[in-house]
Length: 444
Image (cartoon, rainbow, N blue to C red; front, side, top):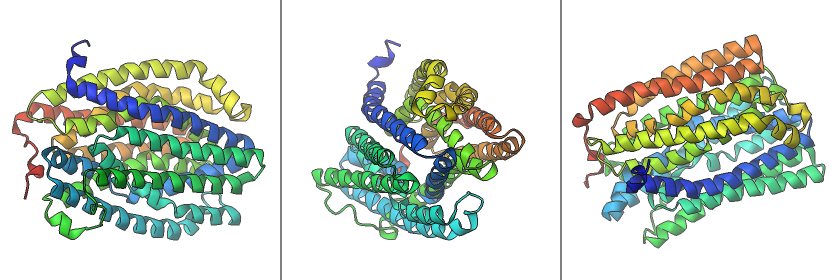
């Protein structure tokens, strides 16, 4: 491992991950505080209803939005490295245009679909109106261009700040709602305002950084003119959009489906368990956000990016073992203290779901390696197989065994994702001599 740290790319990944970790640690603690206030300030049913509303808007956003941050990193990082500001300007303009278009579609779709699902989601007339209000937050969820800009310009410190500010505002709103006994409406409105302000902060940071490198007019949407100057742009964004929509079905929709099949109270328990599970996976998520821009600078025909992936995978797996052990030891006590004994059943779900944490963390480099190798379709195929299997299991096991069945389905789904995605990754490595190095980034 001593030799690993002599690798500049590996050190850069860890450095940027530490920046993000600082924000995520604060974010996780504040998020836990917000959930604690919501859980204690409402009945399990109303808490579950709040979680269902939040899950619904996030699921709609994740289904529709393009992964514009990946596009900015994929095409913008080499352009920025080469000093090609015109190419970077086109990349940002095209990405911004996609964000606007997808946000409009997502808002309209979310509002039109909600009346047909309100009964299944357990929404009464009052909570239905608040859910409609929450749909207007979708643009802040669907836009990822600012994230891509900050990652491309290596400003992971600003990402860390934004990741801390947004949950801070949510926590403050939750404390006011809890101690002011504002009830369900108070939590919905305070979370709404916090998400709106926190999401807008990303855009302010991105605009400031573009001005710093003299790209004052980059944030002008241009779908068709800019895309003509970026060969392969539409193929890339549609492939990653479809891939992320499939990911949304596997992740963002999980809590929503639990609410539909079992009820809002079960959705609340599942959300608490998911919060702990996502916390254990935070190091892998941070490493991924740092790993992807770094690996895009490397030649896929050489062994270096693949060795970097193995090192990052093993490092994440070791962290996963440590964190899973800690959560397993103290998770029950934390839930009882933070949420109260009425939510203690969530710990049995955590014990089931923790089995997947090491495998899923070790598999985090695979998506980046496949994108680097130009194997978006292979990754997409793997995601389709995994998601179809997971959703089938989620519906079946939820129906048969309730919320514990949903947790078991999630465990199997996470494990399948890491194992099935490994197959195209291994094939790409073995055929690396045939890969094309950064052809999409050639100046037109």
